[in-house]
Length: 263
Image 1: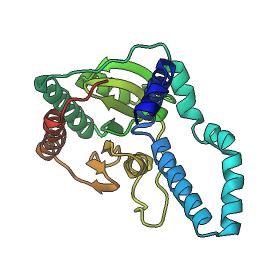
Image 2: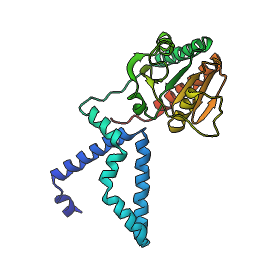
Image 3: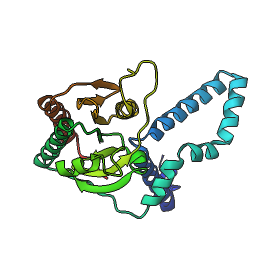
Image 4: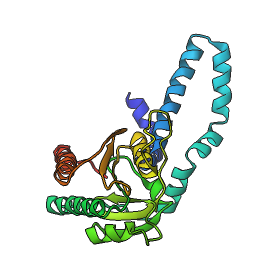
């Protein structure tokens, strides 16, 4: 053991440390994105590859070995968006936004008041609140705003004369980060034909991410809330406030109880 330790150079320690830091930053970049799920899939293929070699499944092993020989090209194709974002963010200092409970509750109240006001005026709206899964890919196709959540701002965005009223507003923390964003449309026979594009878009997004989507119908003025691939309709002001408050304040308390990790 001592002989092995004597053979370790300071360059080896620095090399391992640099590789660890790079891998850590890569995992942070992929965290909360669909690319993370793809990475899990590649891990499963790696396990299958070992098993195929161990059990001497020659045909499967040959197919997988052919796949691994092209892995660099495959990774570039699968993770092209994440690679582009990582390169764009290179050199930028990372930071964490800390919001007090009062600020968070005020932002939620502004969202509720805006939804009710839009409902009373029968103005269609789609308000998306980001949670753990990043919505960066949808933010990039919208109009960047980075403005504090405010009822009047949301009303002006969704006013029929606004050029970005047809898209979705995406909120992160207490900031409206983008408007006029296009979301995946849910298609299928299981969807009611009475649901419009906004409802299908909100529903489709919550199937792919853990975001919360608040939809206001321009035909009926009814407020709906989509989350985790399900939708609740005909929500009143009190119910909407209770759902959002319980959802996000519970998440905040849970996060505060977690051990702090070094960046």
